[in-house]
Image 1 (cartoon, helix red, strand yellow):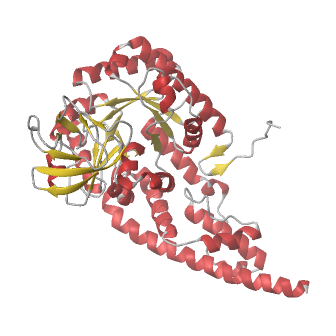
Image 2 (cartoon, rainbow, N blue to C red; image 1 turned 90 degrees about the vertical axis):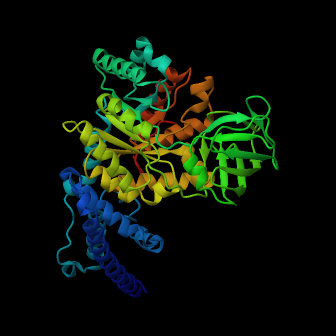
Image 3 (cartoon, rainbow, N blue to C red; image 1 turned 180 degrees about the vertical axis):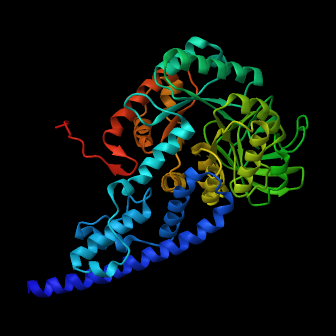
Length: 496
């Protein structure tokens, strides 16, 4: 009986081996085609091996591998579930191990066990690309902490110095607020604080991008209150006085012009949701379908059009004007609402014109469904010319793709970026309750702990942000002892 079982197991193992070898061949062939498509964008030699691995990962993940994984695990072999940074090396290790189990090693031809140094090359490349984009770290923590600062805070040098002293690795400045003069003070104080504390701290400056917001509002006073079923007219110009229904200005007329009947409009990160019932080139009649809290529409609240694939220029006239200052002050340029490789190329050309002798890093902010779909090309175009980090901008992204899909898409972004050896910034509402109110949320602490799988975590501005930096530093340091990316580390446990 044991002999029969052994023969059956060997036959099954040989079939599995043939399948793996065939899969490897397909991954190599399809990956080669992708790299050939990308080659015009690959100017940076340091990114070439990463582009190849990214191509192999995309080819591998086009297939449903769940049955293959289940077949490999009982044999004590890798299920390929942590292969992002080293696709071919992981496949080769599994193939050679399985061949030895079933006694078929002579059939492998050129496939060999990867040397340890080659197997972990992807990990080293990720560390290199992370430092190139986000700067070095000091101490035990490898995940960077980025903090958004307001103008008032950044003008207070003592505050900035304390921020850096407590563990901030990157200070973020948002061009949607303040002036070039204020940004200059913020950046200058950050660099002085880094020099005096001996802690490296880079400056990231976010371009505003084609961000749609509510403008002037005319209803009851300076606000509009809506409930489900109420109507609002969104207009491209100045609202009428005492209109019926109330009117809300859209700061981005080109977005309003592309809106169609039946499409959704979200205000204030989806707290108010409306559907378009009538439209023309200058206005749209909207009916509220879902309202959270008090249902108040005020000026300067974010607008999203999740059902509409907006055709917008990612660099606005304001962005182009701001770039003169941004290129001079920033280490990292945040690219808001980037949606395609062409968008990236446009910004790269502008930066090359403004600072030809300085290679700035880019932070591609992924905020729309189109950006998710085009992420491989965005990565290749950006990292093919300069250091890159990808920011998962969870606020707008959740509204654009739907809140229930956010966790899934966030994981996919992490995986794809690891395959490209590109660092990820985990952003939006991290420790939000504590930053603003000084109170802990259990869910937010868990979110902060899971953020260890990224290379950087962003805190927004708030009255308790200094203490939040300390909490985040502690949480990330603890989690790094237990996990690196998707791999659990079996540190000795002392909880029981």
